Length: 257
Image (cartoon, rainbow, N blue to C red; front, side, top):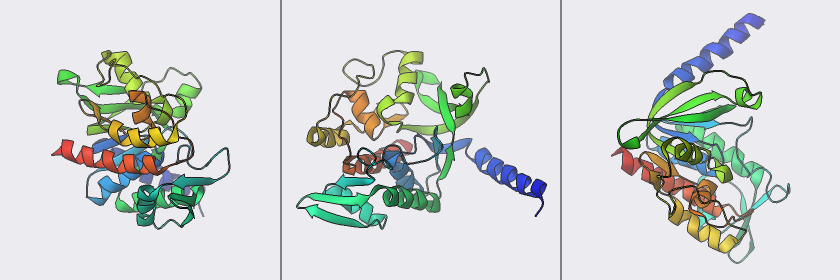
């Protein structure tokens, strides 16, 4: 095996996919459970979706389960989504289901890729592209190592019709929008309100209400939705994350129409 041929194979195949991702229908920031589920349901319907994840690994907070015990809990509705991904789920007691967090992440990621999604890890969203009426029309990207090393390196851009912020608690894309465009989000303050303290039942209920278009061309999903609208965090119950991802895909489809 020739080392240079190996290197060429990696660079050429990666760049082919990256070039194809520069103009897509939907760009998703964050490969946590909500972002991956969003990507799956979009790609399943033939919509060109791409995911950018700033960390090395996908899954967001799901792989760590609860306090590094790699199990997650779901309610009935969340279980139904994991059933679609062929994840083993067992009933703990009435209304509470348990799954292996690593199996869940692996299955969702695998099915999203097989459906046609492209996932690029170690890439961070540095800024957004805007056009008329402050509509979000793309993402400004850089290698995560650039920001971690605090290097001054100019970014590259990709164009899309819809952006989904699934970056979790930090709501990174929404915060960039507020910083660059002003407090124009569709929240009470126009700003990212920030998540409240733990209240699993309330947080799970409100996450679906909060999953919506928060700015022209920008949809929020997963924990980002609760952080933006000021709802509670939920801990290691993940049904709401999965349901939010599915709803975000539906909203993106409607916006594309």
